Amino acid sequence: MKTIALVITSLIAFSGIGQAADATAPVKEIMEATKNNWADNNSDWTDIFDASRLDHLYSKDFVARYQAAAQFPAVDDDGISPFDYDVIVNGQDACPLQDLTMAAAAPVNGTTEVTVRFQKSACSDAPDAKDYTTVRFEVVEEGGNPVIDDIITENIETQARDSLKATMALIAKGQ
Image (cartoon, rainbow, N blue to C red; front, top):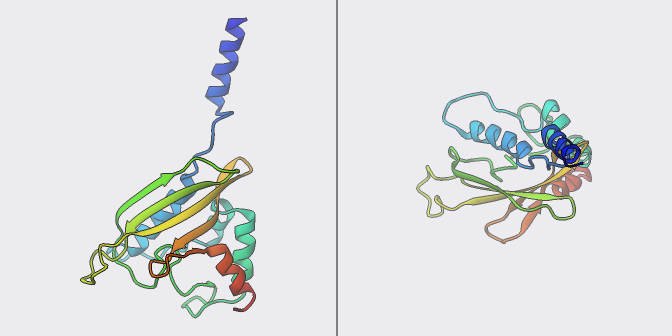
């Protein structure tokens, strides 16, 4: 009987059944693209909301809200983005990202909060150049895979948290 239990335990461990998916995986992909976008390497801009990323990095609800908001493109070169700023750095200007850290909290009610902190203005001479930007990704599991369900930025001036899903809902309403 012990042998059967050992074999079953080994099979479960080997197959990955019962193991939580890595909630940081979709966040890592988005942050790598964002880091490359602001690097001094003159590479092409990577759209973190292109079709291939929407297909596997974001929740169905997030994608539906993005697609509704995309019906109202902001003024930009390609005319398809509902945003006229980088939603991760929460602005139109940034330096190469410095001191980037990422940490996942324990899941609460099926949502894992992945907190990312970085300096976005370290190359600036401004008094707040060394301040950290904090972005919180709400990650859920859909179809056995971790996906981003919301991106929450913290407004330094008001100390408010801004939900990207709420922003997309406003854009979709024409506001």
